Length: 255
Picture (cartoon, rainbow, N blue to C red):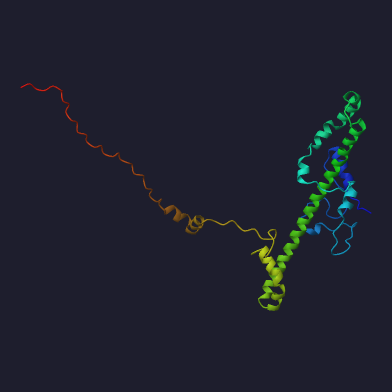
């Protein structure tokens, strides 16, 4: 029997009314912005079959959403498809179907009856809210996993730090843990805890601020500003004296 998601109907109902989606509370922590994995317990209506349980199958989830199981399209197939925003169909979908039903006899399009045209639009209207629910489901599942991974890695790094500390006096303990520690050192070099649990570091002061704080206000007041070098004015290069030759009148003196 497929799993029934009680919040899906509420999401669709609120989307149709223009209100913010508010889901029914199914288990503790629902609807809250959780920061620890303890806020995301396993829902009581689902019992894992074992440590290797992979959860509901894709077919079961798609059946719950009312979707047919089909293969994913290739990027090239997606590129060749015509795209349209959901808002476009909300604006003109029903109206264009009604207009075509009235004027189909005059338009005389082959292989496109009014009933077939109406079914095409109904298919789009049927899939739109289910796509939105599936996207919201994927987002929430991803966020719950991110929180759980962060909490587990924080615990792993705490264990690593404790093992390395005890390993200084217990070589056998360190040898047993060495394969795991080698992977952690390569993946988290120099880190022994998660960024979320590390204490915030105070801002570092510059060297000039440290000197001013150590010397006090009196030393700062007695210090004279260093003389600034004035740029030298470039002198124009001396002009070379030009000797002007006397012009000849062009007339020769008569003797």
